[in-house]
Length: 205
Image (cartoon, rainbow, N blue to C red; front, side):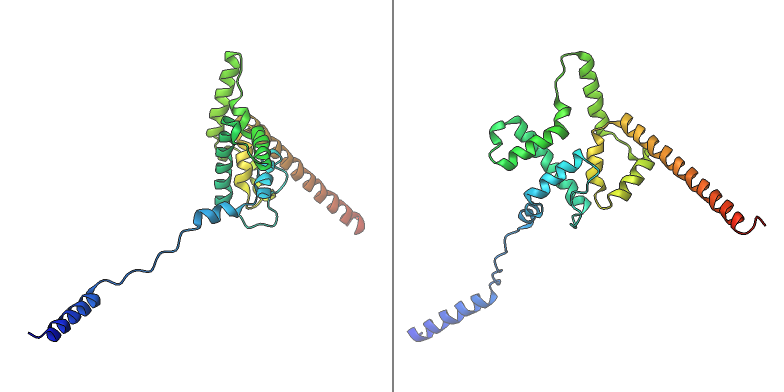
C-alpha cells in the first residue's frame, strides 16, 4: 500500500465519522422568565399595591392589565420580603425597602404583636387562625359589592379583608344586606310615587 493510498483512506474515514456524528445543538438562550416577572411590577406599583390593602376603596392599578395570579404572587413575595426585613433590620438598604417595611408592618405586623396577658395571646392566636380559614361564601353580599367595585383586583382586597377577621366581615356583610333592603324599599316607593303621579296627570281615571 502506497503512502498516498493510506492517506486517502484516513481522509475518507474521517469524513464518514464527521457525517455520522450527531449534529451539535445550538446553544439554548438563557431563561428570562423569572427576571421578567420581577420587572413586571415597578417600585411604585409595589407601594400602591400595599397601600390598597390599607385602603380598599382605591384601585391600585386602574390602567393596568395585571392578572389576579400575578397580583397574588406579588403579594406573596412582598409578604415574604416584609418578614425578612422585620427579622433582620440590616436588610433595609434602600428608601424603597424602608417604605415597604413601614406599610407592610401595618398590614402583617399586627399578627406578630406580643401581648403580656394570656388572654391577649389567645385572641392573637384565634385571630391568626381565622385569617387562614376565611370562607368567602359566608359573605356573598359583601363579595358581590367588592367584585363590582374592583373588577380584576378582587384577590388584592381579599388579602386585605382577611386581616379583619370573620366577625367584622360578617358585620360588613349584614350592613350590605340592610343597605340593599333599604334600596329595594326606596325603589318600591319611587314606583308607587310614579304611579300616583301618572294617575293625577291622567285625571284620576
